[in-house]
Amino acid sequence: MIELTLLPLYLGALIVAYVTPGPDMALVLAVSASRGKMAGFRTVKGFAVGRAIHVLGSGAGLAVLFTSYPGLQMVVRILGAVYLLNWAWKIARAPVGLRQPDSPDFRHGSDMWRGFLTSLLNPKAVLFCSMLLPQFVSPATGSLFTQFMVLGLLLVIVGFIFDCSYVVLSDWLTRTLSRNISDGSQTGQLVERCRNYLMVTVLGGVALLLLKA
Image (tube, rainbow, N blue to C red; front, side):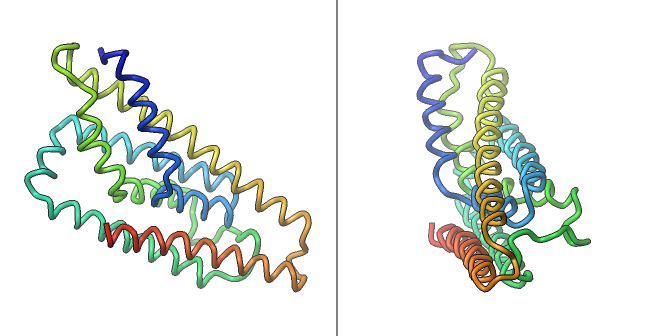
């Protein structure tokens, strides 16, 4: 079992990680604002699966691999940045509208898949699970595998709660705008364009930060 004295520190580290802007936050805000709450929740499910794989990788010795081959971190950052830039490009090309209807390019399964890939290629998640997570386990307190699983479960649950709150907040803000501004009005179109530009800026900005990290 994990040391109870370290649990508050671990939870504090998780909270800081989940309130800090990153690829996962940028994607879930963009999806929820443009396509609604259900699409956002499906994306969150993908995040959870991706994080679970990160935890398993950490338990399998991913930290040693990244320490031995620092270039792997750069590869992960580049792949994550390219994926975010591709998503930003799709939003920039999307028709103006406070809510975009589902299309063949946005099937329900693709929402979860997109969330899974974004989380899997998120260098912040890779570094947290491979470098920081092992600092909270100790052979003296029992099975390392059990400790990794407990800490990993907490990581997934806390992340799920934060991600769902971002979905609800983003969806509520968009619905509020939809009720108060007509899509066809000049003001409505301006707000819609600003929304799209903001999402493109957030996704593009996070991608550039990954490349500079």
